[in-house]
Image (tube, rainbow, N blue to C red; front, side, top):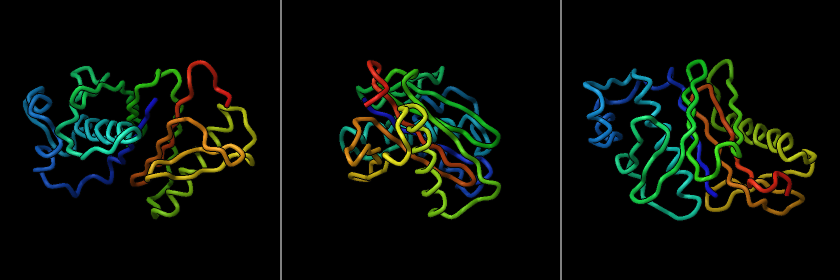
Amino acid sequence: MRLGNDIVDRTATADHNPRFIDRILHPEEKSRRSSWTLDDPLLWIHWACKEAAYKAIRQSRDIPFHHREFILTPDLSMIHYHQECLQLQIRQEDQAVFALATDAALKDCHSRIFAFDTERGTVTQSEKVRSILLDLATEILQLPLHELTMTTAQRIPRICHRGQVLPLPVSLTHHGRYVAASFATPTSSTRP
């Protein structure tokens, strides 16, 4: 079971070169519209989905990240990377575009988004997103917050219960004013 997420603060995307569009979109994706612009919400949906899919696949193996190799289906429900296929969940809240990519059942995926009033530094964002994840895990897993911690292995975050790593895929993201945390639970049980 793998899961990745990404969030884009659309108010913080103005500094990209127009060549950015060619760099991230596969020719098949690009051909689905007559023109693409940097202020197009659909472009940022593609970006977030590709970032999320990369994070999900990276949980099982190390891969190079070439955006154009990740191809979204026209209905935006799936993303393909070579022979692999992941489901997508996309949300837009205020100026945020959020994407989750997974091979778990979408009903077993849990996410929370938080918006700061103003853009914050990376340390503040990292602390907040970890706090959000543990609060969400407490709620979903019905475990006391004081028994949960986080660790990171090979740059992949993990939730620990009483010092033991839980076998749950986790993903954290932040950009601009927004942070988001996600994890998935096995279908058979939500309690470790």
